[in-house]
Length: 454
Image (cartoon, rainbow, N blue to C red; front, side, top):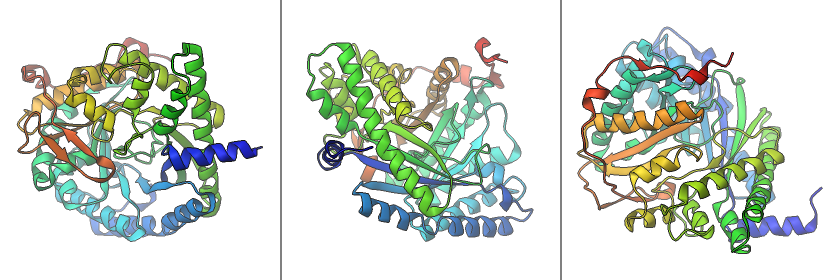
């Protein structure tokens, strides 16, 4: 039962502390759209997506109005396109036509983003996988709302270094293909290790083959709420700190559960998971970095940052799993630089470096996210950064990811503006020592010994 005090408390979270449901994401399987002909396949996926998602945006708007809970985005995730289009696509150009069709379907349904222009290449690449990966630069430059992801490894399979090497080139090509918009195509591309099947957040969302034909996943976020409650317990011991974060995460997750259940009922589509991720926005007061400072750090990046982030991530998950039996996705704390005003300030003041961010990703939800770097870096350097982050995920049995943006024509210390939820970012320095002899080896890095849990 919800009492009057909890109603007022939730209202305060929404009105004053930036609590929102970041996304309702409708997952759609495209496996039944398979065809030998690419035109027939594109027709099939367009018809299925527009039919299934025709009421998604309107449903989100009704729920927002009825419950007074801001729902920022309505999104679609699909079966990884390299799998769904495997029979139909015969060339890179065919794959690009799939991306363009997906973009048209996104526009028709009115969603903010459509994720799943993806390939799962943890152990090796099929012909379709490689075609999709090579098509990403053109696909990202010719679409507005399509997001792409590639899973290059897992704890069970090891790291596909051939894919890692190729993606270093692809990231640079995507930056150049979208250079007139500050290389924003790279903001729609994420490289994973241990990618989950049920992630509602972009750019990494896709509808895993283990999922039902259709599913509703909800992502809820409230960094401002957590910061606000920590202001009331300054100087308290760690037990109090942990209990406060955990109880707050519980309340935030209940909001997501409510929205997810209502959307599921209205659309007649099964409820999947609630993803409780403290996902910041560029808005002041909606920052994960500010939470870390409220814990007692002068600036994100100071000694103790990794420990503070580990505490935050763990207590968020503990609170979330008490609030819903189906917490999933990437639940925890995100640390995207461009989308977090506190992170941007920390970088500008020299408190936060790429190396410190990498250390922090060992204990947070995802990885190196929305990081802008100089546009003149080498492809092998980008591959090295991807390999390092993927290795952290593989060894630690967690999801890690890289969404890095080499901004064409920009140099270290300059700023780049992406707009909207993507925010702005300082161009961060990159270690320029060469790793090409390592990256240019072929094959894969084997799975760690603890992968044999049978």
